[in-house]
Image (cartoon, rainbow, N blue to C red):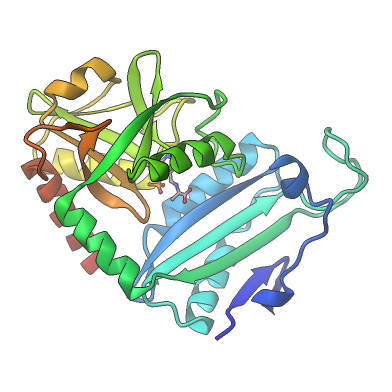
Length: 286
Ligand code: PDD
């Protein structure tokens, strides 16, 4: 079944959803995006994702997204494409303006607004469940991104290259190391359990403040854990009890090996299990 896509105010078949070659995202990666998880046909944490989209738009001086309109579009696409388990992808860019020139175009060109859905195949979901149970491997890579990683921009080349390195080394994620601290993954936030406390890099310009990260910090505190927003020293990895990732599709995922070395006893630990269970309950309450 061909899916329906929302592009610039219209619902169109996927094959017909096309943008001009001098679209500024194609030329300059001049745009922002969001990814929302759909569980049982319902979008999860849509509101905070929309709020972050608005913030990203402001930071790049793009027109303010119409969140109410996008919320209606989200429900309509989930319905039309019969998404039970899947994702919704939103992208807003500065639009088409030829001929190519770096500075913002003058005149009244419109942004490009795209919303896509993707179902998650049963095999992928089963593989994800296995990874949640058993944990995954990660590698470390030097930070090579710009100093505005708080903006969810489609300019993701260092993330793409880092993830590819992880894949080629049989790992699930690449962890960026900046000034000796593990700050975040190529498409996830990272947490450690150190001396019984949960530690994660503070929300600042060097990381994306994940919606899942914020939810997990809140939940962990409700469960009675101490959460410190501080850097995880690379040198401390060898003595941390647990290490885990959070992100929209990833959820709460234990990292049991980094660069070939076991984390803790190499199995999924009790803090991750408690946070996974709380996350599952939040999804079930949707
Ligand atoms: N990535 N850090 C980075 C660099 C990310 O790209 C992501 C998410 C996160 C986690 O954010 P959230 O919990 O809001 O999903 C942290 C998305 C899912 C992606 O690029 O596909």
